[in-house]
Length: 412
Image (cartoon, rainbow, N blue to C red; front, top):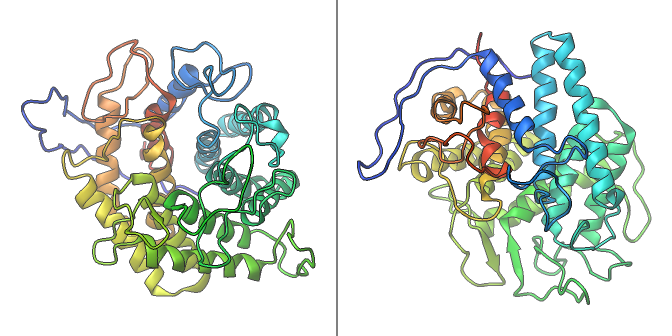
């Protein structure tokens, strides 16, 4: 349950004078939180299909090439609806609670209809599954939804999708993301239409490895405690102990291959024994933080918490140094990074008592909200810059501020 935190007016240190920015910020209210989330939904949720559009320029979310936001970003938006439900519950608002519960159900149903009814063996590139991390993001959100609502279908699909990624698919012909020989998780099956086993030098991205840990630990927290181990070669489910073991194993591979242990920077990827690609992205920092927090909670080993703090400090102090705000990356789907960061930094703040990050998070919210398009209550992805009224905005960039607000709401 989200804590209701005090708000304060903050000033953001000025950007370079050469850049046109609007750095005025002010406090935000409880009403603003709901206005931001409704503004996001009114502008970017397809009201007929209940999946999200790529940009506000599209009237409908038809498919991958025609207005539907990326398959791996849709579960992040579903997470936002679950956080709205949790916030309404915490605020004891029965009307909102019922409304957002129904929204959660509609978003699930809409995505199920859009994406092959969650047949994870369907590798149609338009409405199906063709990259391992696309599936694993759904594994996480499905497990979360089961934890929140107790719907058996959510758990069944979450476990099936985890199995699909780990072991591969006999129907598709890929051998799975998990590297039995050298550890870690491969990013994709090779090639999509004529699958072959991944080679030792193929890419192992942070965006599959740490989400795998998050998924494994979320399932560990939610599957039956006295479940018997499956005897199948590619089991559709794991025991709690197996999920924990898999999560620990992939985490350790990630620490050895993708973490700069001095700074807390997470590499984007590593190919074989080559040097890691040290370009840091906010969403990779985020899932490493989440993986670390979940393992800390499961084991009480302090090194996991230390790692989470190290990665969070790097994100806040180094990556966000230019404007003292989370950085914005220009590229397809990269605007979603803040929404992912919101989910996992909230776990570090609330579950581990690391409240030192709240002023920074509030500053992002206050700056982004002050610079919103006030005609639609939609925020841009560059929180230091004003979004012009009526400007085209993508759902990825627009998600960040409402995602943060739902998890770090106002006191009143």
